[in-house]
Image 1 (spheres, rainbow, N blue to C red):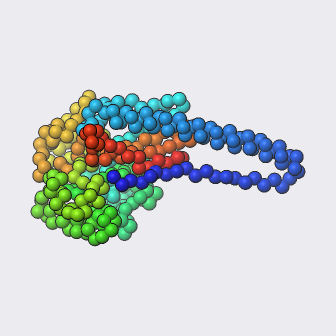
Image 2 (image 1 turned 90 degrees about the vertical axis):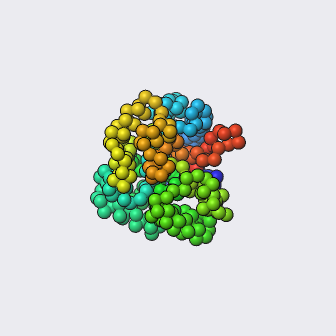
Image 3 (image 1 turned 135 degrees about the horizontal axis):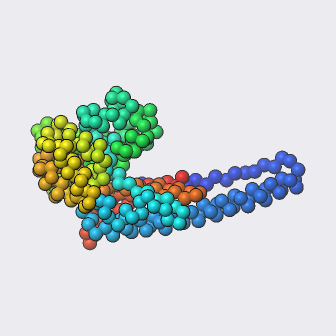
Length: 333
């Protein structure tokens, strides 16, 4: 899997100019230097401790005894909303959120999710930005269209793209950039044709044939895995998806409430989810909602230093059937 190497912290060297009496200046210099050295030493110590905590969290994620389903019953969640040795820790499953780059406009406009935006026309403006620039890369680009609180509650900019439910604009953009060709446009046209005929690519063999020589380049960025994890979707996101008119799901609210009640006491597998919803591989929801988390956000805050990490799970497992994870972003704040 190709991935970014993460962000390194920048160290700023401040040159002090002393324009007053040399002895006074020397005294100031010594005191400022002592403080600067002390702070840098503390920052380094904080970073080392944060890295130790991160490594412990990574190990817990890898030790999950049910790797085919992720939920808050997993061992790693004992770290969430805790303080260890003075460091506040928060963990978030980004697969419980909707990727704003990928979701079709119709789902946002025709569900209660429309209320998350500053105005209904904000959705059109966001989609225009995506069409013009290919992708939204940070919340700051749309801060005037949706509040940060509502964005964090419902949306993310991290995630894989499921071919079967992909909005055609990001599908073309990603496909073209990955293959350095116009194959993305070809993929988007194929997706449109299949959608018009209410057909889905149902297995990797079919997807491999569809992508041809570009299959290894396209995956895992574009794949067939459900991008949302039923065990982490907020009630708002869950009910919006299940009640979306185009999905024509019978007793949608009742099924949503059953899921919300059930997941409080256990993790819901994809097989259980399919049974509750009463859907098959010929239903669009099958390709939206599953039981795995593909992207994690881990935030650790210390007295002098904070760190934000994005961890991604590779859809391809290791040689022994073990999940593989990649650190795709690490920002010191």
